[in-house]
Length: 482
Image (cartoon, rainbow, N blue to C red; front, side):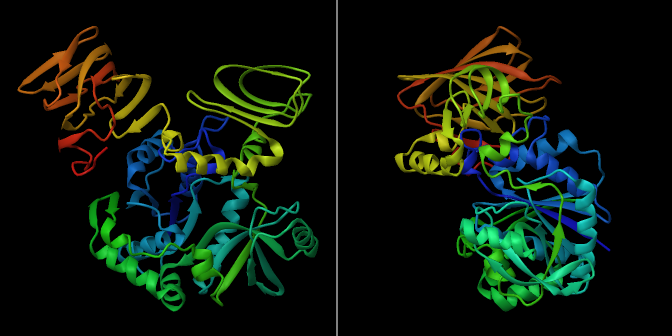
């Protein structure tokens, strides 16, 4: 029996701004215990029985960051697979992509366990038991979802109504999916006892989900199949990576698998769960991961307070002081601060929408930006100049590139750098520098075994990240503009 966890890592988590942004989304948020959500999901999946591979569906811009996160915690020997989407097309497309790939690799009887990269599950023993029930039911031809037993009338989740008379071995037959209810209706669902929160996790055999996609969403399956035929696959013994063709993928409809298949199929079963599940969907949810003080405050970072109650503060980089306030959410990052009332935690997404509509970049990137080769941090951005701190991982190399509108001055702080500067190649040690004129081809490489850290001073008429022409690149970005 082959079980392949499929981790879907595509959400931005706009309600968790300013920490979660498009270039550094919710799955990569570090939690109080030092791990992030995608690491926890990977470990939870890799520990399960009968796992042959862990397959991750993500945006192609997040591949190297995801690999870094897995590498930091991976003590397992499972193969790793990736499907790289050029842009999001919702969960039906992601599930179809995974099913088609797993059919070719493991056959139609393989079991897909679809997990979200940004959920938290505290009781992993109960989760593993629920997965065993789900795998059994999926082997009987069911599309299985995991229903969370509600302990309060939540209005922010969809619900699943199950038939208590339609008991299955380890689960219940699903009668219907229910949209997010109002408070009164949610209370009635909790009281009824046969309604469960929809977790967004699934288990099914490859053959079954492909049959149901053909029956209920044939246009999506056809479009995804056509896109796979034009996509590029790279594979080795314990690694595979499918880079999805962006032109054909644009034709795939944007629909969730709940709506496209699960709500329409007559083969849906639910495994009721009490697994300590949370979708970590707001700062209020995040706050409960931190122990509260006698005044009901929950603090991360250096915080002092006077006559303050029931507040949450996340401020890792500087001192935050609270005086005489209650029920606030305060999240402080290098370049943005959020202050919200707890009752309006769900409304943070409207701030992100305003940033997008105004063209502001703070919904996309942090001051520190992750790249396949390392990171850069913008220290200062002025009129015709920009100063960055660049960290290049051991053995990594930036692309061979050129800028039309800016010159760059590189000063090595620590480590060693090999620099291509037009026709010259030179090696720089700490406290040495080089100047690169606009229009010169150049490249930076770290030949050492420790991080290379340098300061870059840019000057010119235009300093945008899109002023890059790449000629050679180790990460497949020659055609990219950033």
